[in-house]
Image (cartoon, rainbow, N blue to C red; front, side, top):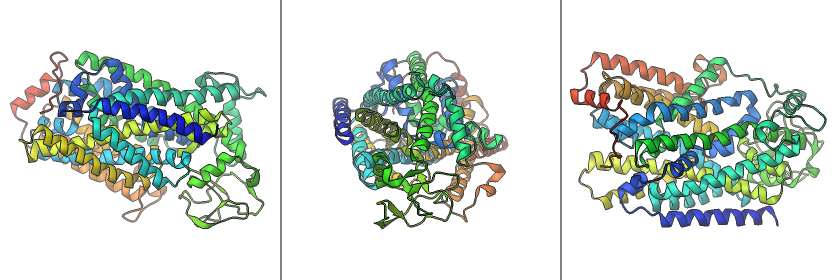
Length: 588
């Protein structure tokens, strides 16, 4: 059977499973909608947390970015893995004891201020929309390739599907759907890795195969370094980022985790604190399976790509290349007229996405309107590498289709969780807590579902027009969370003197500073700028660390020159540090 037929079959089966679970687990109350009724088992919650955490950025884009960035791409592995450990050990137990399952709710009560709650809601919406944009782009990429449509239609199809998951079941439906999605995504990620590792090195375990030898006795990594230098790139196993920028990106990704409410809420879906700890352990193990495999897939895909396309005539290029070219995610322009694809250092598009004309070239290739006179004649979108990897390696069609199903599972699981956070921020933290405290359960659910619908439309737009590749866009979301939420949460737990004036000042300055830097250097607003103009040599993905430091300094200074928090708040801060006695999540 063809790839498209296999894709329809496998994706159809998995989607039928997801829809069935969403209908079966439909939420009937706000507690079921927000925290799945608080009765999820630790193992199921661990699997759901892992699926929530391993988004399109982890499944589709992380290995893709590492395959091009090499050693520099390790910041994503370090930051996201360390971030989950930080969240599970340092923050989640205290937030669970506090009993508030949303970050704005914690900040509003801890800092005894609706003003602080409102600032936190705004920050949560900014972070979540930036994050979900990356997920919608991931969904769009998968659909655009395997349905052979432009990415705009791929995103539109994804929007409709995510709406069903989040709209019907809330956290209850999403949790049990994510258990199934974890099984699909991890199977889809590992199967091609086993195949390709054995195919290239004879070792079936990809983590071992990455450091293994090829048939000629050459180490795989040495071979890749040699290919890189021959084409004018830096060696794959060396990095070009400064030590400071590596540190800044890694730390921003780690501490930004603390401000991602779609993961924090997971610790309230289990009955007891003990179960929350167990589910955190399960999730960390399940996440590690994918995260330790991603570098191997990066090496395999990069090696196969170079050997497949470099110095190959376009007329002889494999079918997978032309399929991805039709989606607009691979582009080739024939500068010297020899009909061959030259893949060398430099970028034919100067890092910009291709703009196509309506005509085709003499070889049948799509013509690019914005190609420069630079040396390189090939543009490859980083986000396609994991999806294209089985095709490049010539694996069976069912494996190619399985990867498509896995990519959709990863993107949809996280998108649904994020959309629930957005709806909760509106319906619970804004409407219920501030505007209309006497709203009925039914009315609150109505607002929650209406918020999801609006959020889908907005996130779909940013999915079509993202500020970067999926992983890079998600990294910006972590930077925004680090700049705004982390100081307010960590100081709220461990600093009894921290007051509402300090927290509000820090959050406002931090989020504005990060937004300005992101818009200036990622979206070319406020005059734009180049790498040479970066402040302190810090990339936009790492600037969350700088903004976080500014936030902490301002929060501490302002809190020390203004009135101390009330005694009852100080007593709460002292009590949440004691593990025993944690109750259920406080929905109302």
